Length: 469
Image (tube, rainbow, N blue to C red; front, top):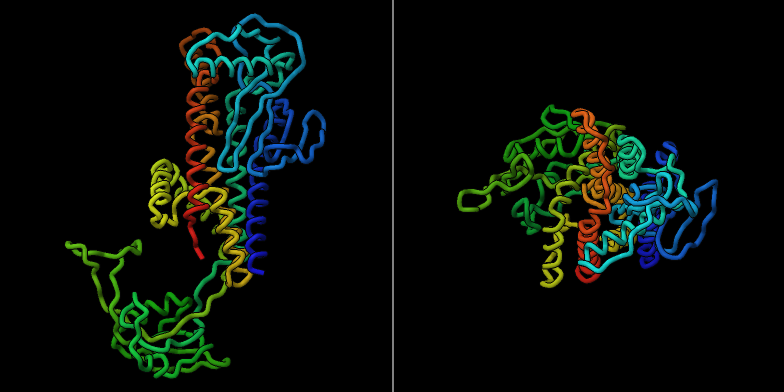
């Protein structure tokens, strides 16, 4: 059963990721069609086609490897500057998105025909690569409808199309976090006592216990009691009760509990145990020599029950945007984080649990969550939260302003618009449209870097995985 649950967890995550990619591509598809761009294909996955159906001018389908997807839009880039040859049939440019982010590849459609490319000449590697990209782009321009190409759209429409995919991932993350926090609820320690401790610990940070009766047991507290107030102060959460107890080491407290529907008042005196001093962020406070500062806190020996408490409807969006900031902080350090992962891979040291993961690593964690001994609702909640976090990662990753990512295409469109505004302000002739094929060498370097980083993460997730369970 455990193995089956592990496999189910992996399958659920993969299907959830495939749905996220499908919605990402839908975020590109809807505005593209709305603005009149010819879309030839909408495909989920890569590799051999398992299923496809044409509806209108667009072919919709599913491919064998559900770790990416793409749509094909006519005219991503303008044609080469050469003699037009109005022959052939329309073709499409392909825009792809990978599971770890997005890759919008470039090809385009024609103005009144197609520029016939010059024969390829020998040259440096990148020069040949640029020429090949232009040749491939020009081949797609043959016979295309010049009124339905991407590069002719106003800048704001091109930006909307390219941002549509990442924004769809953000919206999906908001929905998932809202379901998690407002639908299921946040697991919270309540004021109902689950059990009493068997002994008094030597400190708040150790499991070493001193045999003897705890203050809670001596006072007559029992499992199932609901703490109503402490020394006249009402408590709504276990954190409220714990704070009052910790601040009253050695002082007798009057604790009102509800037991079997009736309230009782008990007297309890917390014992003092050592505990480290924490700052406002919950981090240990250290002295000048690096020693952790300590103090004494009250302890009575009770453990709380936990329950899912539904949060306000705005908790989901708030959590999603908080995650955006956290993931963005990781993304700009991604090369360093991947390097640290590579070091841990070869040294066998423990990986940072907050570091980057590949799809393989995320799938393994989902499988472990599904196969854990936790209640079913806990396992479902964890996988929903994991999918929400993956969509936040897709959102942030695709906004990186480098080709072939969505953010790179946004930068190209904005640069094209800025050049035109500049020319208009200074009454100069309209400039040529930005030729993004010149950026193919940079795009190649980015793709190679992404492949290398992805390979390192996959290998690390297989050999030295992060385990949360």
